[in-house]
Image (cartoon, rainbow, N blue to C red):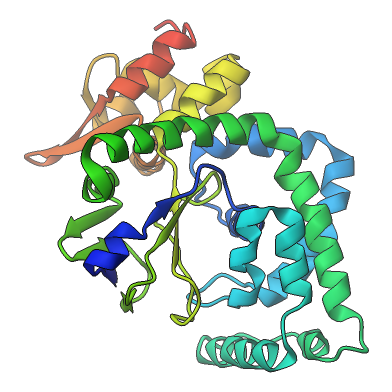
Length: 335
C-alpha cells in the first residue's frame, strides 16, 4: 500500500496530465513484455509489434539494457523516468543524458542491494554508466529513443485514442467535483480517505507531498496497480493505468475483427457462453476443457473487465459486465 499524504496546498497543486509520459511508457512496456500474465486487451498491440521484424530489431538493444537496469521487482532507478519527460521524449532523453555521476552511483547501488536481497546478479556493464568516458550512458539513451519509436510511437493511434478517452472522463469528473472527486473516480485502484490517498502498491510506503502537489499521469502500458518513484525528494508523480473500458472501445474501433482473433478462440467462446451466467464447472463442461484451464481463462477475462465472478455456495458464478456485453455485441459474435 502506498499512502500519499496531502495538505490543502497539495490538493490545489495536484495536476492531471492529458497525455502519456514517453519514458514512463518505455519502462512500463518493458515490464509488460516480460509479464506472462499480461491482460488480454494488450493483444492487438502485441500482435502488431510481432508482425514487424523491423520494429522488433529496433527495440532489441534497449530491451537487453533494460533487462539489467530495470529487472522485475520492487525497485528500478528513478533517473530512467525524469520529470522533464513530461515535456516530451527529447526533453526526457536529454535529462537522462545529464544525470550526474553521483546520482547514478547512488541509484545503481540501491539496485545492487535489491538484487542481492533477491538472489539476483547485477550485470557488470552497469558500472560503465558512471564513467563519462565509457559511452555506456550515450548507448542507453540512443537505445531508449529507438525503443520508444518501435514500441510506443509506431502504435500512436491505438495508444492515443485509449488514453484520450480515459483523460476525458477524468477531466469531466474534475470539473464537476474537484480534485477529491477525481481521486474517488479511480476506485478500486486507489481510495481517497481525506487527507490520504491510499494506492494499491507492491510495497508499504508513505509519501508526504509537503506542499509540492502530485502529478497524475495516465498510462497505456501500466496495469494492475499505479506506480511512483522511489526517491521521495523528487517531484511527486503517480502513473496510473487507464481503465479496460477505454482500451476495449479503442480496439474495436481500430480493429473490429473477430473476437477469436483478438483474444483467442477459448476466451471468445467463454464470452459467448456467458450470455447466460454460468459457473466454472458449467463452462468447463460446455467448452470441453479442464477446470484448471477454465479458471485461468475466467481470471484473464475478469482482469480485463469483461466479466464479474461471485461465489454462490461452493460454486463461482461468472457474469458478463456491461463492457463484456458491448464487446460481444459489437464484434457480432453469435452463440
